[in-house]
Structures are given as structure tokens and as C-alpha cells.
Amino acid sequence: MATVFGLRLCGPFQAAAFQQDYNAQIQTIPNTGQQITPLAPRGSRFTALNPGLSDFPQYAVGQAVTTVVSPDHRTLLILTSGYNVLNATSGANQGNQINADSNEYVFVFDITNKIPVQKQVVQVPNTYNGIVFDPSGTTFYVAGGVDDNVHIYDLSGSGWAERGGSPVALGHSAGVDDCDRVAF
Image: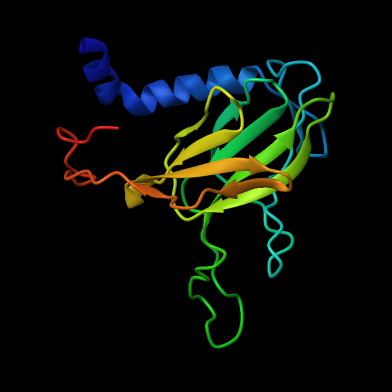
């Protein structure tokens, strides 16, 4: 508790010291603005997550928060959670949210080869960090965040599809701000 209290008093100073230490580990390549991070594992790749939206084909989502690998180690799921909200950039609805495109996503990658291959993108209205495979690897579950539900996806011949009857309402009586009674 004393450490937390001390950090609160010294927060800006601690952050500045951390930033100096962190910057000392990064080398900037002259004239490009690119950085080399020596702590990244050899062979690591950075890949933008594009959900393939027809009206925003260049859109890359943010807030990738959780990953899970299937029990057979062949599939990687990446879950986003946060604020992937898209607004109309022109027309009568300019500046207004486009609900059909403002979702969270589960990116499905085949990881059987050296370079992962994106196979599918599943849209989820709301999420909050929770994703897990069942032991068979043929079903995965996604927590529905503020919607207080769980989405269930099954593997079919053509990919992953939400199970009939999903999402399953959890029926918690506590609100998001009532942390003493929330159970998950």
C-alpha cells in the first residue's frame, strides 16, 4: 500500500523516469522515424488488423486486448475491445456513428505455418477482454462486455459461426459501477 501511495505522489516523476529508461532501449533509425525495439522476439512481425469492411476497406482496428491459441495449436484468435467506432465522413450523416461498422472483432488466424494467415473476422457488438476455447477447440466463447452476455461460436465447414440461441444473457443484477456484486 505504501508503494501505491508513493507512486501517486510521485506519479509524474516516475513516469518521466520510466520514459527515459524506455527510450534508452529504443534506437531510432535516422531520417525514417522508424524504431528498433531490441526486446521484441526474433522473427516478430507487426500486422495491422483489417476487418475488411466494404465501406471502409482501409480501416485498421485498434484495441487488440486478448489472444488465445486453440488446443491443437493451429488457430489464433485475437479479440478487440474498446472503441472501434466509425463515423460517416460525408453525406447527410456526416459525423454520426455508423452502427453497422462500429463493432468489436475476433480475428481468426491459421498459425500452422511460419507466417500467420488471417482466415476470418467475426464481428461482436461489445466485448471486454474475455475469450476462450472449449477443450475440443471447436467452440469458443466471447464475453459481451456491457451487454452482460456471452457469445458462442462453433466451427463449421466454412469457418466460425455464432451458435443459435447466442448470445446467452447472464442476467447479473449488478451494474457496471457496482463492483462489489458483479460476478463473472
